[in-house]
Length: 130
Figure 1 (cartoon, helix red, strand yellow):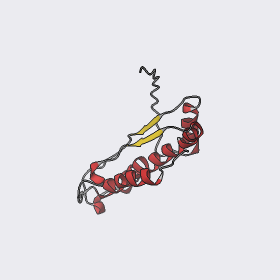
Figure 2 (tube, one colour; figure 1 turned 120 degrees about the horizontal axis):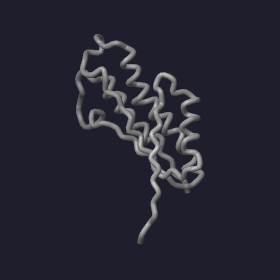
Figure 3 (spheres, one colour; figure 1 turned 30 degrees about the vertical axis):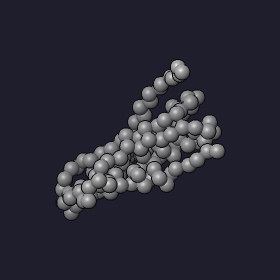
C-alpha cells in the first residue's frame, strides 16, 4: 500500500521572555489550515551548567524554567483543539534521561527538575478522542 504523505515542517520560535498570548496566537495562526498530525516539542536549555544552587544567578535559572516547562506547556496546549476536532494527532515531548534514568543529577537540580516535568506533563495531558 502506498500512502502519500505531505510534510510541512514549521519551526516556531517563542521568545521566552514574552511567550504570552500574542506569541501563542501567532503559533496557532501558523498551523491554521494545516492537518497537523504530529507536533514534536524538542526545546531545552541546560545553561548555566553545573553549579551549586546558592552560587547561581536566578535569571538564567528562570529562563531554563520558561523554556523547559512553560513553553512546552503552551505549545502543547495550542495543539489539542485541532487534533480533537479532526479526531487524530499526536504530541511528542522530548525530555532527558536526567529526569528518570539517573538517581540524582548533582549540580543540575533545576535542569533535572524541569526535565522531570516533561513526562509528568505528557501523562497528565493525555486525551482520547472516540
